[in-house]
Image 1 (tube, helix red, strand yellow):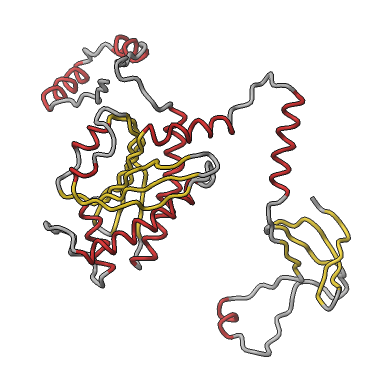
Image 2 (cartoon, rainbow, N blue to C red):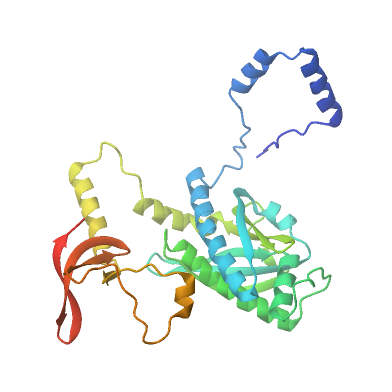
Length: 336
């Protein structure tokens, strides 16, 4: 499929355009008609698209979650601030991804599994660019990250450290997918030779997710390659579970669907707290507190009721008491 990028104007074309604007010879009506004209995109029927817009959008959302979790993990691992951002999630042929790989690479081959849905032996590739990988290695080995411009193979110790990182990334992938689909992720192997990563046919469709990683002044990419064959069964199950409900749906089916959702939510654990009272304390007073100091609360002694919060929201008022040698709260009023 031919996808044209926006044409870049040369300096001569820019000068001609500015000259016409100054002389008033620009036909704005023609430009407006041309802009409002229907855009035509070429489509190659010999290589039909395997991913829908919704599926690519789902992948982008999943890897948005992954990039945030990965940034938090890297910040903790390297003891520094790390930023990540999903730049794109697009479909292309595997040969395009494969041809872009250099001879010396760092790729984790990660398996996806779900026994209940008979999903097994599905694999994706996670490539970490060399500068990013050597920056991480330098920090993990006690350096300041400056030694990332390296033109050599990875040592056995460095590969062991990267294998540890890929295993943690597999766990983060599981967490990122958990809101949409339960998938176990395991590291199958680590590859450093582009020739040994040919695990699917060159003309097969893949989704490529590009994540930019910023480590101080260094910017590099983590590229994720997801073959359509690996995701086909997952998307099929996902679509069957989360299919959109038609506006003319059967009221009985809609009621049953809502009931099923509520039943699943009833087991959700929430945090409840009984608030005896609150007090305003300055930072100076807080730092000066010692054992035995008394903090007056805004709650008056004459007030018998206390607030009962659920997930920081005030839901009830109640009375403090005891039950079976434990403090307890008796609900006296429902506020929500």
